Every structure is written in C-alpha cells, then in structure tokens.
Image 1 (tube, rainbow, N blue to C red):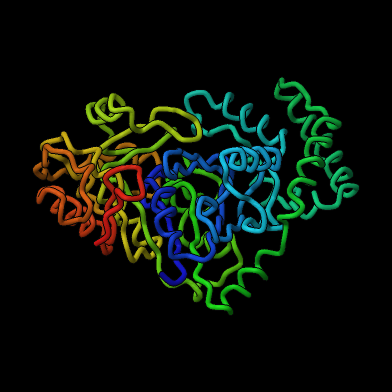
Image 2: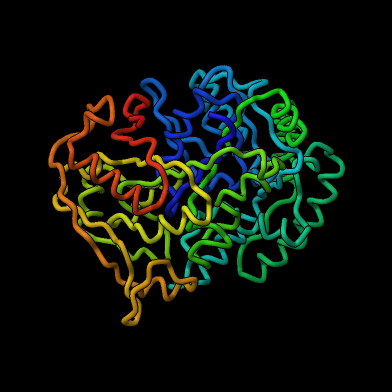
Length: 422
C-alpha cells in the first residue's frame, strides 16, 4: 500500500471511516492530521457500530499504531471520554495510541465563543458544530493557543489558562454570555492531562523513525475538500486544511515521502451546514432520509443531498493530486432511475467546467446534467465489482472518469465485506 493520504473529495461525510478501516489492514500506522471532534468517522466492526471523533479508525484493528498529529485540535476531556468508551466496548488502548505534544487544545471558552458567534450571524450562519474548533484554530494562528505540551506541565498550564480565561471571559461577557469558571476548567483539564500523559510524544520523530524502518503509513483526513479553509466554499468551511497538503503540515512528514493520494466520494453528493450545493435535490434527499441514511455522525443533523457533481470532484482531484478513487454508497441509488450527473455549471449565461472561487457565485450556479440508466435492484450482496449490475458498473466507471482519477474501490454497504476492489 505504501504511504497513502486519504481525503474526502466532496463536502465531508463521504464514508472515509469505512475506507480507512479497510485500508488499515495493510497499514502499520494510521495518522490523523487535522480537525477536531467536530468530525465523525463511522465504522462497523463485527456486530458493533463505532463513531470515532478524535482517535484514528485504525484503533479498531489489533497491531496497528494510531497517531493524533500536531495539526489536530484536541479537547482533552472529550478525548478521555472517547478512550473510555472504546475500552468499555472491548477495544484495547495503550501503546497503540500516540498524541502529538504540539497539538493545540480546545477549551470550554472556544465552544462558548463558537456558539455566540454563530448565534449572532443569523441567516449568515456557517452551520458550525459549535465544538469550538474555529476559535481554537484562531488562537493557534494568533500564536496565543495552549498546546498539549503545556498541559503536561501543570503549573505552567494553570498560569497560561488563567490569563486566557480572564481574556475570554471578558469577551463572553461583552457578548452577553455567562463567564466560565477557571477553577472548574483547570481541575478538569489537569485531570484529563494526567490520563493522557502516557500517550503524549514527539510524533514527528516517531513517524520519521517509522519511515526509516519501512513502515507503511495511512494518513487519515477529516471532513472533505470543499470544507478546506483555503480551497473550500469559503466562508462556509472548517478552520483547517482538509486537502492532501494538510497531511504533511499536520504530521511533520514531508511531501516527497507520500506515495499516493486516495480520494473518497459518494455516488451522489451531500453536505451538512450552509453554503453552495448546486445539485441539491429535495426528491433524492427525501428518499435517502426515508431510508434512514444521511444523518450526521457527529451532529445527527439531516444532511443536504443532491446528484453527483463531477465539476466539484474533478476540481478536488486537481487540488489533492488524487491518484485513486473509492466510491461509497453506491447502494443508495439502487432504486433510482434515471440517475443524473452534473457535468457543468451555468452562471449568468456562461458555462463553467470548474467551480467559481466566490461562494455566492457558486450558490447561483445551475447544474448541467446528463442522465444515466439506473439498475433498479439491490447491490448489497455483491462480493466483487463484476457482481454489480452492468448499469451500476457503468455508472461508477463514468463518474470516476469524469472526476479524472482511477477507480479502485466501490462500496455497497457499511460492512467491511461490502467493499469491492477493482
């Protein structure tokens, strides 16, 4: 497998958790490089369903090392809770987990600020999960954030926290929100820090030693290409680089050590929150929701749904340098005939084959569709790609060709065995 970066080629929720779980069978190390507990990877392991927020999906396989890299923002209390939940479910967590000492912390005032800012935006709200991720990355960029290394030095952490609490409580008070107790936060975080201490390490050094030993590393991305702070539908984006470059900056592994980029995309399009979604369609959304599909793993919110957008995914291939594609949720279209595919946009009378940079213009784009025949029968029991109906095979190959990368996997259900290799 070599060293693989896995990215979402749409607006997140592409089924990356399941594909990561499949790929982990051939990897030695799985690394999370960005985002926080605003992300959720759903993995079916045996008869159990796991939703992972901070810990890489590789934790569910024995003998794999999982690393939370420096580019991740960590809520220590939430991470301890996630560890405890996995242990309760019978998952061993010990020397198989490492946490970067350079990762920044998400604190309660980040969550409070996130909520207050979102409330004040009214109709212009972003649709944030209100987990404090944006404000935490904001502190990081402003060079005022607290890091895991600070938490490992209790006296220093308390001193820094007191200053930050005083500053942020003043802001919260000005916004009409209640101040947060320093004593409570300090006690909770120091307790969480002691629980996490055995896992904390210089993960850059660890990963480079692993590379020298010939270990194969899987870099696990969170969210999707069009939630990237630089390349997404700004301002309706997350606060980190969700594209392939984020795997390098978020782990300290150089670009030339990466061997391939695998993009994951659904057989249709979804997103959570506000912002452009040119192919959004109420009919397909209603159908998927009635099937019990397309509800956020982190928020539980119903996702917005639409037809496959080849304009967006082709651009994602360009940005990420995607070599291979995994198409998920092909079974979600089992009852649909015909199936629409967006192959261009129309904006103010002009046809576009790439998305506009301005989010408002992207919202005004109207999709240009081609139609393909559906297969009108279940794909769930397929064991290999050739078992799929011809129409399903043709559809998967066509959207991959429009995207511009090589199709290597197709998924027809949540279980490991429902991943078909080409």
